[in-house]
Length: 433
Image (cartoon, rainbow, N blue to C red; front, side):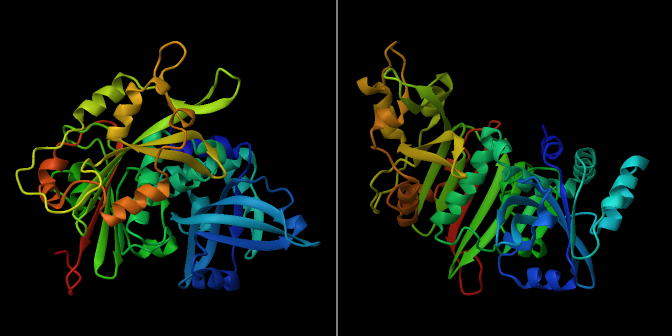
């Protein structure tokens, strides 16, 4: 089901909010550092009284002598003082048309057009739409492929809808892991973001409105990157830090042939290592003593994937140190969101193989399971793997990494969403070495 369809169902229960900023509020928002990622606004209780959050909001602001429209998520409503309520709005993303008046022109049904006209707020005001009009307006926005990224972003912030298909969520998480491993802030502004038209990329979920000047919506053939995977690339983002550059590629159904299901490939040219992470979901289960645990039951697919995780033979002398030469890690994630995040742990491929043959992993009926209880704290946390990637302590040796084309050409094809993060040094002219 598309993001527009999911959001249309949501706003029939929690109707959409329209916000029209005047010149003063618009200027303040434009001049704020992270306002398009997160801002709050306080108004008398009566203004927000009938707002049912979290829900989608559509904001029109005055910008560069005209107007622009942004889709965001009104995530929270709290009491700010005796007289005022505070509304929190997150991740504004530009949508088209660029004004409420032009959006009204896209509404064809006479009844809906009349309802929208009656509910359009004046400058500086807010209004709540009816459930049916909310759903209709979402469908109107969804009819423009350039709005799909904004709809995806709004969908990702709604709690019950954040249980997106595994590959979609894994891609977003893999992007954040790659950014953290590069040692920059999660809200750092990229030099450029390129998104393939009519596709969904986790790169559309990062950043602020500042990206809009750097965002390029293009056909796959126009996206910079590997020629071999260009038809399957859905997005590309470039970050820079001092003399280093991080290039993130997102792709679907990569035509690569050996290592099935890898969700993140991190190529660190600075340290000369490659690390690959695959995601698996943990399901809640009851233990024999009546307690609860989160576990993953290995299946044939996992066994087949493990068999394919082989490195090509390296004939060169290995001169650099690694705690572990193997680049493969598994990230096990709780399917349920806890405190606005997915809780997880990581194990290396070698450790996973040992776990699968250990007596502790055997259930009462002889089945194999992997869980928090089974591991008893013997696993890597998110911060651990990020430090290991960043330092070059794990992953392929530099000589093996030089054979990047050979290694990457053996990554599996499949219906997984993959993130390729490529960190490299730049010369003084800002070009990759």
